[in-house]
Length: 370
Image (cartoon, rainbow, N blue to C red):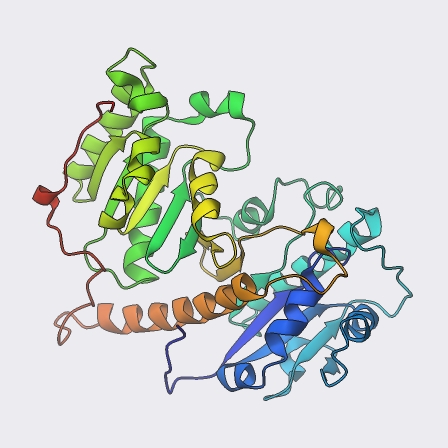
């Protein structure tokens, strides 16, 4: 739930993603509730004619908005759109076309500039198509990698979130046959550091507890089914512990989720994309969100993709998109509070603790199979 504060009203930049998907539908449905405008000022980066087309198609005739030149002109208590072009655009719901990719990139590029100039405080990205957005200017697997490059951070982290469930991935959008080679002790420790710092700063968890999954079935079964756990993952965990991180594992992924053990931790670090996202989407596909940890700016998105099969049918759920907005605003507020607390060497009451009661000694730490 969104935290209510008396601080400055957050301006939320929303990129329109692929206009042939469900992006405009979820944007319109989410923002059509006037109570949303009491929480933040929305600025859509998109095409006003496409927004108007979708408003009519969805029969949301009372959905009103202001066209502005840039985010600095955004009206309070109004839905604003920075119009990227006045040209006529053909809408082909459910189809991947180059023009949709071109405008998805233009929206993202503009939003990144504006958040860098503090004209907006967060970016919520609607889903894009990873194929049609590729160009000489965009040669990235997705939002995460592009944003990391733009802000020149050495490490970022994809974190899937639903309430207290947070699943991060060590390796992101890379082919499966490249995963094992990409798992190194140094990379593991770097990602653990990003995750730990994010849990403290973005979620105000004082001593976060992190679970690390193994790569192989049964976490390698002590070398019988693979040796990455013994040679790379476990040594990295030991070094991270020596640095003060509360990290445990490596755990076999199947039993870890099947037994509900994930609920004992503030976050889980999976070794590769599908190892983390498959259980996450099975548990909370309709309400989960994607957060890019480690960036100096706040970026979230819904957990779902373009959903071409639902486009134009008025069937898309807006829960995930709403949650992406709420979470982004909460993280902005948490960062402000964390900065305020950290600047005081003797803060009254300290930082609020995380959501689990077990001490490290209460958590079984094993790399054995089941």
